[in-house]
Image (cartoon, rainbow, N blue to C red; front, top):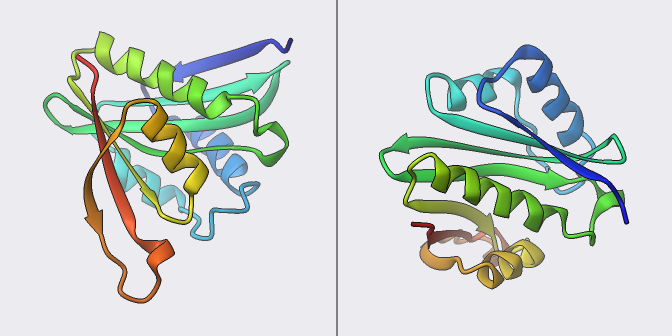
Amino acid sequence: MYTTTIERHTQLTDELLQSIINLTEQIPEFDRRYSPQDYFQRLHNKPLMIQIISIEGELAGFKIGYSEQSGLFYSWLGAILPEFRQLGLAKTLLNDQEKWAKDNGYITMEVTTYNRFSAMLQMLIQQGYKIAGLQKNELEINNNKLILNKNIN
């Protein structure tokens, strides 16, 4: 069995941001890369929690969440490096994020995903998330954005 560790961060530092950017550059599904300014703009002055997951000391993935309204924690962005997939790490991060959010007074978790990410959608449904909304893409059904919620209270 592997030794898995999760670091939790509630402040976005330059070093942490660079680690996340380095990880996202290794994720083939991320066709849109975010700039440091994008992260800053989205996360500045908001309650946030960033997780970094490692296996045997090697970075394997991350998850970023934040809050813009009372009681709701939004799970924004996350990924597992391809060589570490199928080990349950995304589920481990999600469960850890939910526990942290509940312990910090949040009632609802929200996450968005796209039709093209069927493994993510299946995992979310298996974890008790319910489809709460849909943003249709008229050109490509795989680009329909699904909004899912879960009561964690």
